Length: 345
Image 1 (cartoon, one colour):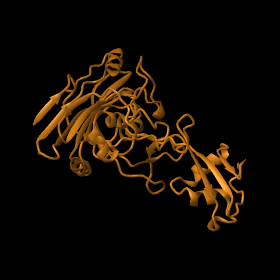
Image 2: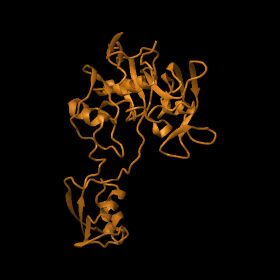
Image 3: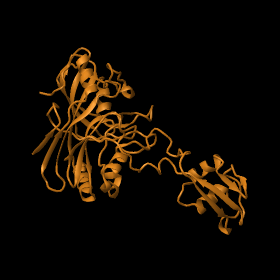
Image 4: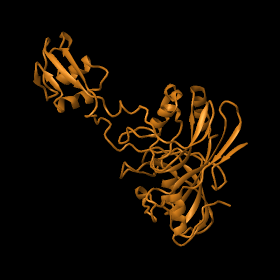
């Protein structure tokens, strides 16, 4: 096995994780400060007596009705030379419509943006990156730019030819650690299959509140779904009452104090926020994870979760690969405040 260690990270059992950012903002938000396109259109017999917004859908089919309604509300549509603000205005055959088309944030998302990317490994078929905390992986509402995908598009021309720039799995914005990215379609399809078969192994370490009691090893087998009381959160749910998916996580307490614990996390499923939700269900919310009841320690304001180990068979050559990334400085400093170490046995 090729072992590509980046430093003093722990070496232990592997895991598969499926974290992804929640969608928190309005997808239809428009860009007001970019180049616009002016269009002049004529209402045809087929749109006669239609609502203006419905007529526009027929005349400009590449844009959604909701987006065209936004243009109306913003005063960017005129009818026969006069501003048209009401979507319900009825039009007649022969009417002239002028639109100022502005690109949406979503339409601008998949653009190259130069940024520093910590590449751990690279060959003709794939690369492995060490994602820092604070970097969003894929464009989504609220983060249409400045993502890892944008950086990959700027770094590698081949990324333009692969769906999602080769991204096959995600980490939450504030989770740090290792990710594998495909550089061609064949490698991407093979990696997706490996992930589905749970053959891409990842190991996490986490710093959590509360003194660990009882056995050092615990297994949580509890379904996860959208929190019925707060749609921005996930939660352990009763599948007889709420929608969700089965989820299982194994935890090993590596070290602990009265204040908190340093935990190794192994996932048998890959649900959104799985480690964070299951740790909170044990009354050990992650340090810095305000969404699930955690609070900062020192300068560590983000959730104390790090994907330190990644192992899989190369999708083309079959070579066994293993990569490790050291615990980030912000987590090390927080651990030292509690008198904890940062290495597994």
